[in-house]
Image (cartoon, rainbow, N blue to C red):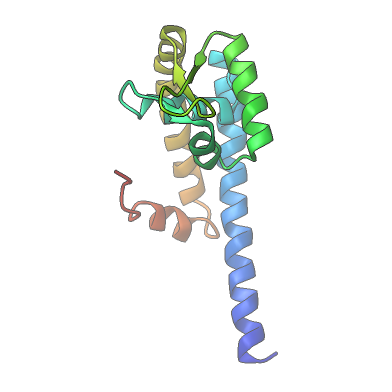
Length: 149
């Protein structure tokens, strides 16, 4: 195996480690959020992303980026959350083709109920992962990632 092959294997191992950590965290969050708030992880992510807009709204395209979903998957997700009265869509006043999405009062209330569960489970999952020799370096690296604005 040459140097280039070693580099490929190192990246592949890093990706597998990242996927393992993601799977551990997402599985725990999925179970806890579903049981406590009736939300999936991606539904929680949508509510959280909209809440971080400080009472403002997001275009569907921005929401798709925030959730790492395709446009069509985002639309289906927004439809489901709108049917549950957790968010609403608003036409853009300047551009009638633009559609914004924003949280409703019910969406805010459910997010506030789910947030402590999310945070507690995330902390516990990261602590568990930190005790694994394979995952510990990645968990440590997460503590040094700068916060987004």
